[in-house]
Length: 460
Image (cartoon, rainbow, N blue to C red; front, side, top):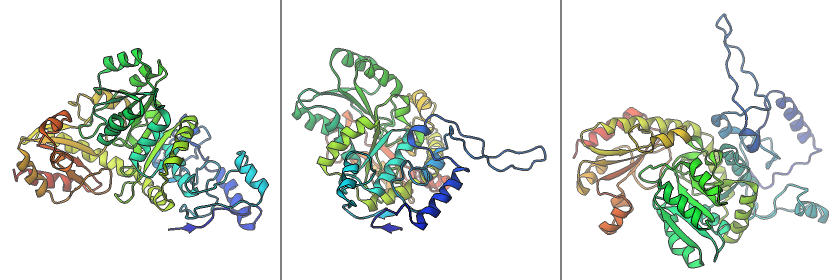
């Protein structure tokens, strides 16, 4: 790990002069893209073969070119950064661990306060390492701005508190949204004088009626949902809500920025538990919020008061994990789809939930707004509570654990992991059957996972 106490380099120093010279030379080969410019260009052909069958050298991207997510995940916010949040020659982004930053003079401080000088003041307000991560996520989400937080739940709470005014706001959300977000909206926001309305995920008629008849501040939804992998038509929802000036916020955690970009189809805000696919290694807790500069500025002001700043060390770990996100997610997409197809025809399966399946009620929606359906599938085994427990216990590769999106496969039986001790009525309300299994695929070889699942099914 590269660690630094300050990212500042004297612009007139020989070191900086050499760096600038290299930057000018490299600009002839590749154009750095900001998040705003990355959304409206096209990817060039990387290899061209002449008549003799010789592969020509890859052509350099032009200024109006969007690079692939695979490339942006590696370089965005760093080599391809805007304004240079980190002025360094290190290939690895340094960890700036200092909690406070100094100014050369009072005039220097005033220039910073007036926005004429880009710098940092205090760790809770911002940090150079964290800013690199925020710029990287903005590029991938095609967002103007991103705020990284200490957890996904902190991202959700900060967003709702910032954008929905107490005493006058109205939140519409779905009965399928993340359980802790649903509880916060129902139990906490309602006590602040905020009206709360729950609708079924794909009941567009009810949503339209609610939006038309009442002043809705914000519509909040997950897509896909957990654990049933239902999808909502983000473009349609955005059209319905924007006609009445309501904001749309999508929790896209189960998709990842690789598979789905809600902002490009009409959403105003997208949130993630960055703990999952974005970090990708089950070793850091974080959240993120992306959207317009105006909306993220409002959320950032609340975030300062909530104190949910992420540490520079955690930000570095996520930057490190993000570089392989496209590769990881592609593998997880393929494994999940192949396994869903296999299990759908297995005699010991009652039902498989995965929007990538043609048989899924949400396949047409997923196909219209996603490039892949993620690494999580859920399925109902033809057995009872204890029979499914035997199946889970017989698996040798995955860990029995909550969470998803990492390199290691995880498995859980929601009736045991999340709803143990809950009433049958509560489980039924959430669509949780005793025989339901949620499987989050990692990056292990498909054949190994397939054989493991098939041998475990033989135990019931």
